[in-house]
Image (cartoon, rainbow, N blue to C red; front, top):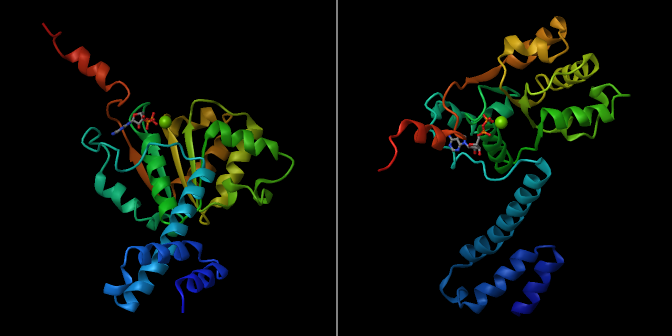
Length: 253
Ligand code: ADP
Ligand code: MG
């Protein structure tokens, strides 16, 4: 039996990375010193690893998540308001399995987007479908299909993904129709999917964002806060940290 034949068989089965791996291993002279079971394991594990890495790269691209914000790059020491244990707990993905929400409130620059995105990246790694959009982007998408109730926007990622991340709620106010569309989305996902939301405005101000509609805003908050993980970050702005440091330090002589 030749190496060439084994390679062809693996390719016929669609195991192209395993086929490459087997050629590498033979070229290295590995097989002579390795037990057959271990060889099988290495060859097939290689196929699984390459596929998994590709799946992750594609999912990350489709998710719309911005680059460069991960849990590893978040400086927890800088932001003591953010309890690392709670974030680590969320990073297990348990909240997504349970269809729970995560809400980040706080002024600009405290790391709300960073944490939301980092949890999204982790969720992709765990194999969940994730969709990230700013509130304004999301609203534009909802409006494109305004002729249909949101629950019928069937193939749209914002509806069907396991984890929806809505960033930057509060910079723009919405009219009644927009408000209603967002409420429909929240209602459609309620107890069926997870939502991470960031806002620079406290919940008590949301009625001003949502067309001064008390009824809908209350109903929306009700669904968002039920089974949610709440973070109120009231710390320093990371964007301004160097500026603030410069202000507090005596000038270098
Ligand atoms: P927010 O969404 O609360 O306005 P961001 O998450 O966008 O703030 O943070 C602003 C910038 O500072 C981003 O580039 C982010 O990566 C960075 N940043 C914020 N907080 C931290 C932190 N604790 N550690 C590392 N980088 C941070
Ligand atoms: Mg932000």
